[in-house]
Length: 85
Image (cartoon, rainbow, N blue to C red; front, top):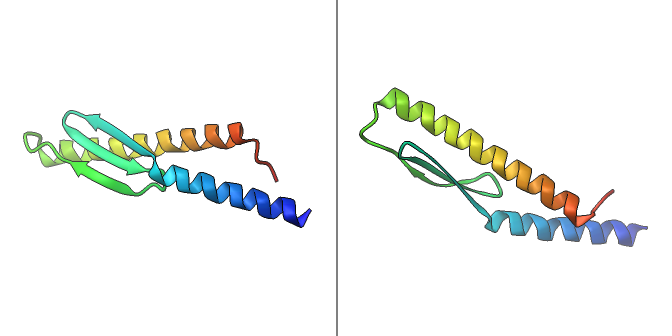
């Protein structure tokens, strides 16, 4: 039983490593956000033709969308893996 739990933990670590390598890119009106599977922002591009308020709004939307995409991908992958505790 303990061995099975350790095996599952190892499988989860491997999945976490694979998530870290995944990249999600969301772009709106020239504002671009790149995020990895650990929810780390790995890239941001702003659009200098937009005013500051518009850039802030779009940046927030891009960050939230990227997070949602990653969460859905993670849930789908975990469900497909069959790992359960």
